[in-house]
Length: 305
Ligand code: RIB
Image (cartoon, rainbow, N blue to C red):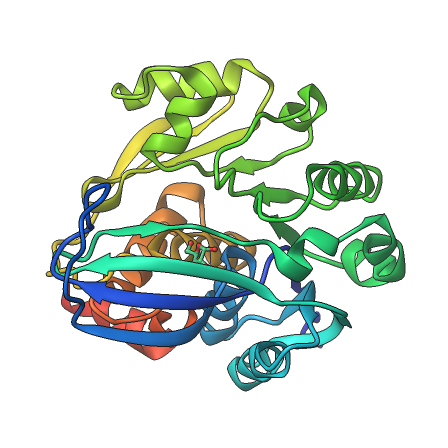
Protein backbone atom coordinates (compact mmCIF):
# COMPACT_ATOMS: atom_id res chain seq x y z
CA UNK A 1 0.00 0.00 0.00
CA UNK A 2 1.34 3.48 -0.90
CA UNK A 3 1.49 5.75 2.15
CA UNK A 4 -0.40 9.07 1.71
CA UNK A 5 1.87 12.07 1.37
CA UNK A 6 1.60 14.57 4.20
CA UNK A 7 0.56 17.91 2.67
CA UNK A 8 2.52 21.11 2.52
CA UNK A 9 0.48 23.66 4.50
CA UNK A 10 1.03 27.36 3.94
CA UNK A 11 0.05 29.69 6.76
CA UNK A 12 0.57 32.99 5.02
CA UNK A 13 -0.37 35.78 2.71
CA UNK A 14 -2.41 36.06 -0.44
CA UNK A 15 -2.45 39.27 -2.42
CA UNK A 16 -3.60 40.77 -5.68
CA UNK A 17 -0.54 42.22 -7.43
CA UNK A 18 -1.13 45.54 -9.22
CA UNK A 19 1.71 45.46 -11.72
CA UNK A 20 2.90 48.52 -13.63
CA UNK A 21 5.40 47.60 -16.34
CA UNK A 22 7.96 50.32 -16.94
CA UNK A 23 11.24 50.81 -18.84
CA UNK A 24 12.99 51.26 -15.48
CA UNK A 25 12.11 51.75 -11.80
CA UNK A 26 11.34 55.51 -11.47
CA UNK A 27 13.56 57.67 -9.29
CA UNK A 28 12.03 59.76 -6.48
CA UNK A 29 9.99 62.59 -8.03
CA UNK A 30 10.30 61.18 -11.55
CA UNK A 31 7.36 60.48 -13.91
CA UNK A 32 7.80 57.78 -16.56
CA UNK A 33 5.54 56.48 -19.33
CA UNK A 34 4.67 52.88 -18.49
CA UNK A 35 4.39 50.01 -20.97
CA UNK A 36 1.55 48.04 -19.37
CA UNK A 37 -0.61 47.31 -16.34
CA UNK A 38 -2.02 44.03 -15.00
CA UNK A 39 -3.78 42.73 -11.92
CA UNK A 40 -2.46 39.25 -11.25
CA UNK A 41 -2.60 36.91 -8.22
CA UNK A 42 0.36 37.01 -5.85
CA UNK A 43 1.33 37.18 -2.21
CA UNK A 44 4.34 35.27 -0.99
CA UNK A 45 2.27 32.57 0.71
CA UNK A 46 -0.08 31.97 -2.20
CA UNK A 47 2.81 32.00 -4.69
CA UNK A 48 4.58 29.29 -2.70
CA UNK A 49 1.34 27.29 -2.55
CA UNK A 50 0.85 27.46 -6.32
CA UNK A 51 4.52 26.61 -6.94
CA UNK A 52 4.27 23.42 -4.86
CA UNK A 53 0.84 22.43 -6.22
CA UNK A 54 1.91 22.77 -9.86
CA UNK A 55 4.78 20.43 -9.07
CA UNK A 56 2.18 17.80 -8.22
CA UNK A 57 2.40 17.87 -4.43
CA UNK A 58 -0.68 18.08 -2.12
CA UNK A 59 -0.90 21.63 -0.77
CA UNK A 60 -3.35 23.41 1.53
CA UNK A 61 -3.54 27.15 2.19
CA UNK A 62 -4.52 28.81 5.46
CA UNK A 63 -5.12 32.48 4.69
CA UNK A 64 -7.66 35.30 4.54
CA UNK A 65 -9.05 37.33 1.67
CA UNK A 66 -11.28 40.40 1.74
CA UNK A 67 -14.91 40.80 0.67
CA UNK A 68 -13.86 42.97 -2.29
CA UNK A 69 -13.88 41.83 -5.93
CA UNK A 70 -10.35 40.43 -5.58
CA UNK A 71 -11.14 37.96 -2.76
CA UNK A 72 -13.10 35.36 -4.79
CA UNK A 73 -10.68 35.68 -7.73
CA UNK A 74 -7.72 34.95 -5.47
CA UNK A 75 -9.37 31.86 -3.96
CA UNK A 76 -10.41 30.64 -7.42
CA UNK A 77 -6.85 31.00 -8.67
CA UNK A 78 -5.59 28.74 -5.87
CA UNK A 79 -8.30 26.15 -6.54
CA UNK A 80 -7.44 26.18 -10.23
CA UNK A 81 -3.81 25.39 -9.34
CA UNK A 82 -4.96 22.43 -7.23
CA UNK A 83 -4.48 24.03 -3.81
CA UNK A 84 -6.88 22.91 -1.07
CA UNK A 85 -8.65 26.07 0.16
CA UNK A 86 -10.82 24.76 3.03
CA UNK A 87 -8.58 26.64 5.48
CA UNK A 88 -9.29 30.00 3.87
CA UNK A 89 -11.68 32.62 5.19
CA UNK A 90 -13.24 35.80 3.83
CA UNK A 91 -13.21 38.87 6.10
CA UNK A 92 -14.73 42.30 5.64
CA UNK A 93 -12.58 44.93 3.99
CA UNK A 94 -9.95 44.81 1.30
CA UNK A 95 -7.85 41.81 0.24
CA UNK A 96 -4.08 42.12 0.43
CA UNK A 97 -2.77 44.33 -2.38
CA UNK A 98 0.71 44.73 -3.83
CA UNK A 99 1.26 47.71 -6.11
CA UNK A 100 4.57 47.19 -7.87
CA UNK A 101 6.84 48.31 -10.67
CA UNK A 102 8.43 45.68 -12.91
CA UNK A 103 11.17 47.10 -15.14
CA UNK A 104 12.25 45.91 -18.61
CA UNK A 105 15.36 44.30 -17.09
CA UNK A 106 13.11 42.07 -14.95
CA UNK A 107 13.84 43.81 -11.64
CA UNK A 108 11.04 45.07 -9.40
CA UNK A 109 10.03 47.32 -6.51
CA UNK A 110 7.00 46.27 -4.42
CA UNK A 111 4.84 47.78 -1.66
CA UNK A 112 2.60 45.31 0.17
CA UNK A 113 -0.65 46.64 1.67
CA UNK A 114 -1.72 43.86 4.11
CA UNK A 115 -5.55 44.19 3.97
CA UNK A 116 -6.99 40.78 4.97
CA UNK A 117 -3.48 39.38 5.56
CA UNK A 118 -3.23 41.79 8.49
CA UNK A 119 -6.31 40.08 9.97
CA UNK A 120 -4.63 36.67 10.23
CA UNK A 121 -4.93 35.95 13.96
CA UNK A 122 -4.40 33.10 16.44
CA UNK A 123 -7.95 31.88 15.84
CA UNK A 124 -7.09 30.97 12.26
CA UNK A 125 -4.37 28.64 13.56
CA UNK A 126 -6.69 27.11 16.16
CA UNK A 127 -9.44 26.61 13.57
CA UNK A 128 -7.01 24.78 11.29
CA UNK A 129 -5.06 22.93 14.00
CA UNK A 130 -5.80 19.48 12.60
CA UNK A 131 -4.70 20.45 9.09
CA UNK A 132 -1.54 22.22 10.27
CA UNK A 133 -0.67 19.35 12.61
CA UNK A 134 -1.00 16.88 9.72
CA UNK A 135 1.50 18.72 7.51
CA UNK A 136 4.73 17.27 6.18
CA UNK A 137 6.02 20.83 6.28
CA UNK A 138 4.53 24.25 7.06
CA UNK A 139 5.66 27.21 4.95
CA UNK A 140 5.51 30.72 6.42
CA UNK A 141 6.59 34.21 5.36
CA UNK A 142 6.46 37.62 7.06
CA UNK A 143 3.39 39.14 5.39
CA UNK A 144 1.05 38.23 8.29
CA UNK A 145 1.20 39.68 11.83
CA UNK A 146 4.30 38.62 13.75
CA UNK A 147 2.16 37.50 16.68
CA UNK A 148 0.35 35.00 14.44
CA UNK A 149 3.64 33.78 13.00
CA UNK A 150 4.95 33.15 16.54
CA UNK A 151 1.75 31.34 17.48
CA UNK A 152 2.05 29.17 14.34
CA UNK A 153 5.69 28.33 15.07
CA UNK A 154 4.87 27.44 18.70
CA UNK A 155 2.10 25.17 17.46
CA UNK A 156 4.35 23.48 14.88
CA UNK A 157 7.11 22.97 17.46
CA UNK A 158 4.65 21.21 19.78
CA UNK A 159 3.28 19.12 16.91
CA UNK A 160 6.81 18.29 15.59
CA UNK A 161 5.97 19.72 12.16
CA UNK A 162 9.02 21.18 10.37
CA UNK A 163 8.73 24.81 9.29
CA UNK A 164 10.33 26.60 6.35
CA UNK A 165 10.37 30.34 7.06
CA UNK A 166 10.89 32.77 4.21
CA UNK A 167 11.92 35.84 6.25
CA UNK A 168 10.48 38.29 3.74
CA UNK A 169 9.90 41.16 3.81
CA UNK A 170 12.74 41.41 6.35
CA UNK A 171 11.59 42.23 9.90
CA UNK A 172 12.93 41.83 13.42
CA UNK A 173 12.12 38.34 14.69
CA UNK A 174 11.37 37.14 18.23
CA UNK A 175 14.31 35.16 19.72
CA UNK A 176 12.28 31.94 19.91
CA UNK A 177 12.09 31.75 16.12
CA UNK A 178 15.68 30.63 15.63
CA UNK A 179 15.13 27.29 17.37
CA UNK A 180 11.74 26.68 15.77
CA UNK A 181 12.64 26.81 12.11
CA UNK A 182 13.99 23.91 10.06
CA UNK A 183 14.77 25.99 6.94
CA UNK A 184 15.41 29.75 6.84
CA UNK A 185 15.54 31.14 3.29
CA UNK A 186 16.49 34.85 3.00
CA UNK A 187 17.60 36.55 -0.20
CA UNK A 188 20.68 38.76 -0.06
CA UNK A 189 19.03 41.95 1.23
CA UNK A 190 16.99 40.01 3.77
CA UNK A 191 20.12 38.17 4.96
CA UNK A 192 21.78 41.58 5.48
CA UNK A 193 18.93 42.52 7.81
CA UNK A 194 19.53 39.43 9.95
CA UNK A 195 23.35 39.27 9.99
CA UNK A 196 24.61 42.70 8.89
CA UNK A 197 26.98 42.47 5.91
CA UNK A 198 25.77 39.50 3.86
CA UNK A 199 28.22 39.67 0.95
CA UNK A 200 30.07 36.52 2.08
CA UNK A 201 27.50 33.73 1.85
CA UNK A 202 29.49 31.20 3.86
CA UNK A 203 30.03 33.64 6.74
CA UNK A 204 26.39 34.75 6.64
CA UNK A 205 25.13 31.18 6.74
CA UNK A 206 27.41 30.43 9.69
CA UNK A 207 26.14 33.49 11.60
CA UNK A 208 22.54 32.42 10.98
CA UNK A 209 23.20 28.82 12.03
CA UNK A 210 24.92 30.11 15.18
CA UNK A 211 21.57 31.69 16.15
CA UNK A 212 20.11 28.17 16.49
CA UNK A 213 18.72 27.47 13.02
CA UNK A 214 18.99 23.91 11.66
CA UNK A 215 19.17 24.76 7.98
CA UNK A 216 19.82 27.88 5.93
CA UNK A 217 19.32 28.58 2.24
CA UNK A 218 20.72 31.91 1.08
CA UNK A 219 18.87 32.70 -2.15
CA UNK A 220 21.16 34.66 -4.46
CA UNK A 221 19.14 35.02 -7.69
CA UNK A 222 21.36 34.55 -10.74
CA UNK A 223 24.21 33.17 -8.61
CA UNK A 224 22.16 30.33 -7.18
CA UNK A 225 21.73 29.30 -3.56
CA UNK A 226 24.09 28.62 -0.69
CA UNK A 227 22.75 25.73 1.37
CA UNK A 228 24.10 24.96 4.85
CA UNK A 229 23.00 22.74 7.72
CA UNK A 230 24.00 23.00 11.38
CA UNK A 231 27.21 21.08 12.05
CA UNK A 232 27.35 19.73 8.50
CA UNK A 233 27.66 20.43 4.79
CA UNK A 234 27.66 24.01 3.44
CA UNK A 235 27.82 24.39 -0.36
CA UNK A 236 26.75 26.51 -3.30
CA UNK A 237 24.18 25.18 -5.74
CA UNK A 238 24.70 27.20 -8.91
CA UNK A 239 21.80 28.86 -10.74
CA UNK A 240 20.89 27.93 -14.32
CA UNK A 241 21.58 30.67 -16.87
CA UNK A 242 18.40 32.03 -18.47
CA UNK A 243 17.22 35.40 -19.82
CA UNK A 244 15.07 36.80 -17.01
CA UNK A 245 12.14 39.02 -17.96
CA UNK A 246 10.34 39.17 -14.58
CA UNK A 247 11.90 38.14 -11.27
CA UNK A 248 8.73 38.67 -9.18
CA UNK A 249 8.06 35.56 -7.05
CA UNK A 250 11.21 33.71 -8.16
CA UNK A 251 12.10 33.30 -4.48
CA UNK A 252 8.60 31.98 -3.77
CA UNK A 253 8.94 29.51 -6.62
CA UNK A 254 12.24 28.35 -5.11
CA UNK A 255 10.65 27.80 -1.68
CA UNK A 256 7.67 25.86 -2.99
CA UNK A 257 9.89 23.63 -5.14
CA UNK A 258 12.51 23.19 -2.40
CA UNK A 259 9.81 22.02 0.03
CA UNK A 260 8.41 19.54 -2.53
CA UNK A 261 11.83 18.06 -3.26
CA UNK A 262 12.71 17.75 0.43
CA UNK A 263 9.42 16.01 1.17
CA UNK A 264 10.06 13.67 -1.76
CA UNK A 265 13.21 12.57 0.04
CA UNK A 266 15.90 14.52 -1.80
CA UNK A 267 18.88 15.85 0.15
CA UNK A 268 18.96 19.64 0.55
CA UNK A 269 21.50 20.27 -2.23
CA UNK A 270 19.66 18.11 -4.77
CA UNK A 271 16.44 19.81 -3.66
CA UNK A 272 18.05 23.23 -4.20
CA UNK A 273 19.07 22.22 -7.74
CA UNK A 274 15.46 21.24 -8.46
CA UNK A 275 14.29 24.55 -6.94
CA UNK A 276 16.85 26.50 -9.00
CA UNK A 277 15.46 24.87 -12.14
CA UNK A 278 11.88 25.81 -11.19
CA UNK A 279 12.96 29.40 -10.43
CA UNK A 280 14.87 29.62 -13.71
CA UNK A 281 11.67 28.86 -15.62
CA UNK A 282 9.68 31.24 -13.39
CA UNK A 283 11.84 34.27 -14.25
CA UNK A 284 11.30 33.74 -17.99
CA UNK A 285 7.55 34.34 -17.51
CA UNK A 286 5.46 37.31 -16.46
CA UNK A 287 3.48 37.43 -13.22
CA UNK A 288 3.77 35.97 -9.73
CA UNK A 289 1.59 32.87 -9.20
CA UNK A 290 1.06 32.76 -12.97
CA UNK A 291 4.76 32.18 -13.61
CA UNK A 292 5.11 28.94 -11.59
CA UNK A 293 6.11 25.96 -13.75
CA UNK A 294 4.42 22.56 -13.98
CA UNK A 295 6.28 19.41 -12.90
CA UNK A 296 6.86 18.16 -16.45
CA UNK A 297 8.40 21.51 -17.38
CA UNK A 298 10.91 21.36 -14.53
CA UNK A 299 11.75 17.73 -15.30
CA UNK A 300 12.30 18.58 -18.99
CA UNK A 301 14.42 21.61 -18.04
CA UNK A 302 16.64 19.47 -15.79
CA UNK A 303 17.04 16.84 -18.52
CA UNK A 304 18.20 19.46 -21.03
CA UNK A 305 20.45 21.43 -18.63
O1 RIB B 1 7.41 37.54 -3.57
C1 RIB B 1 6.62 38.20 -4.53
C2 RIB B 1 5.35 38.67 -3.92
O2 RIB B 1 5.64 39.65 -2.95
C3 RIB B 1 4.42 39.34 -4.87
O3 RIB B 1 3.52 38.45 -5.49
C4 RIB B 1 3.70 40.37 -4.00
O4 RIB B 1 2.39 40.04 -3.75
C5 RIB B 1 4.51 40.42 -2.71
O5 RIB B 1 3.84 39.83 -1.69
